[in-house]
Image (cartoon, rainbow, N blue to C red):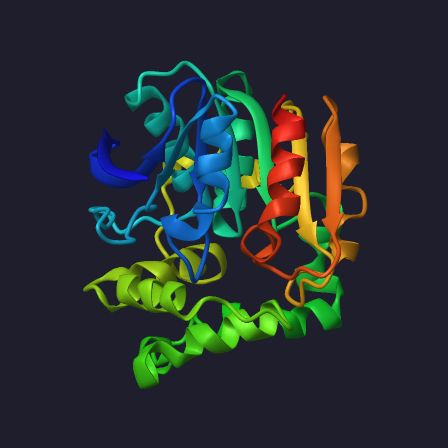
Amino acid sequence: MKAGTVQARGLTFHTLEEGEGPLVLCLHGFPDHARTFRYQMPVLAAAGFRVVAPFTRGYAPTDPASDGCYQTATQAMDILAIIEALGYDDAVVYGHDWGALAAYGAALAAPERLRALITSAVPYGPQMAGAFMTSYDQQKRFWYMFFFQHPFAEVAVAHDDFAFIEHLWSDWSPGWRWPADEMELVKATFRKPGVLDAALAYYRAQLGSGKQDPALVELQAKMFGAPIEVPGLMIHGADDALMRSQLLEGMSDVYPKGLRMEIVPGAGHFVHQEKPDVVNRILVDFLS
């Protein structure tokens, strides 16, 4: 993978890149960074694609948001701007966790700009939309989202050299032992000034008092379950302890152009890192 930059929406996005051909744009989640796709990028490049994984807004070395806006609709507009800035009319967009939420928004905002939508770990549709209000079990799993609304969250997450991140990974992907050197690189990202503030701002924009762009009110409202007019692939870990596979129920109903769903046995929330060979076969088959 080579490092690069792209200018979009007034920000400098730092990227990892590999391959040549049609664009596949990969968006990471929390607590993570662009290297999360290290197993997928060479395989997709070998299949004939140009694969670009940006560090999303606020995740250094990418710039923080100058206006302090981290809502999912803003991230969706980042995706569309990055596609254009890279010189493409459209792209396959692949999002994990927060990257999946942003990818859904991009598909809603400009479906003609997405050749296909691949998401992982965060479902979309009626079950997901209702989980916050109707599922006590899921509300308990989302405890950290509510915890992040409090001002002492910064201290708690950073305590003991970001041990909080290790606990989340263990909880969400039970039984997986991640490579120690990769965890160190994730922590190195979060040690950089402003990254933790930005990461928590994503959650505060979603559930709390975080800044909202008035121009994106309509798009933000659509992201609770409006139909997605893009062919889709959803890859989910069967053992994801954060987002239970039951949340996938009804998801195909909001994909009028078709949705392929793959539930990977023996994998949790970080399915693409835990079972890369399985995930890579699914990706190449879908894109071919």
